Length: 150
Image (cartoon, rainbow, N blue to C red; front, side):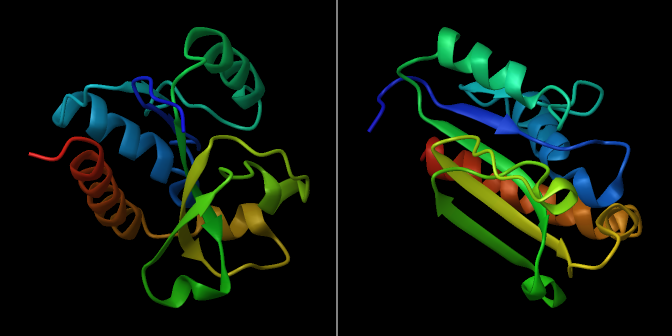
C-alpha cells in the first residue's frame, strides 16, 4: 500500500447535476474541512472526461507514493435508495457515456445518482441538485473522518 499523503481525485462536471458529486466533494474537502491531503477537482475546476488523463499523469508524476482515491457519480440499478460503493481499483470515468473502461485511482468511491437509461447524459442532467448536494456532504465528511480520525 502506498504511504504518501492521500490524493483525492474528484471526477465530474459541476454543470450537470447528476455528475457533480465529485466536484462538490472536492469543494467541501478543500474549502470547508481543510483536508490535509491533495484534492484535484472542484466546482469551477472540474476533472472530467476531457482532462482526466492529464490529471492522472500529473498525479503519477507529482505524487508517486500517494494512494489515489477517486470519487465519481454513476448510474446504477441500486439508485432507488442512496447507494455508495467503495471499490478496489478505482473508478471508470465516462463509462456511462462511452462504455470505455479506463480506471482512475487505487480506490474508488462510486455514488449511484440514478438508474441507467438509453440516454445517460439526459438522465444525469435530470438528477435532483438537492439529492446530489446532500449525498456529497455525507461522502466528504465520511471520507475526511476515515482519512483523518480525531
